[in-house]
Image 1 (cartoon, rainbow, N blue to C red):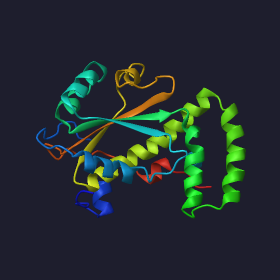
Image 2: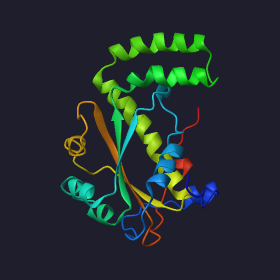
Image 3: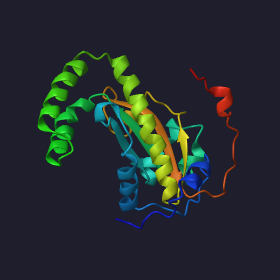
Length: 212
């Protein structure tokens, strides 16, 4: 894999993160390093470990042109970022359950009897799950991986911007995915900031937390 993290100071990674809208367009991210970033990001938790996130990395000029009419309010990020990472939720993620759990058994992470019991239980649950509940689940899981992705990007020396304003009803087909199966959650622009961005105010815990 490519070089190692440029920053391992979590306090700096977390507190120094900014939503960057204009990037140094001369800075690119190799496929090797982008793969490493995604592999680190998917350490995020997910409901019964079904990992429903799916990524489309849009980095070519041709790919970005396909996105242009779909991200009208985020053209600066589109034009200057190293890539726009579209995160979809796979509404048929349970298709991967056998592979995920069998591999866990092979690696010694899970006993066979636990795998068998869990798959038996969860398969019945997924068979009866409504589309609305499924979407709710993948939105939570993909939100977790998106945040992880943004923090991992900073550890590699890059900056990001989480984008929710795009044509969600058109984007799956624009990148060649089945819109009934893949639910668009977020786009994360990634690259090297052209300027450091600016901090923003956060409400303190005292105002947003209840104790029982």
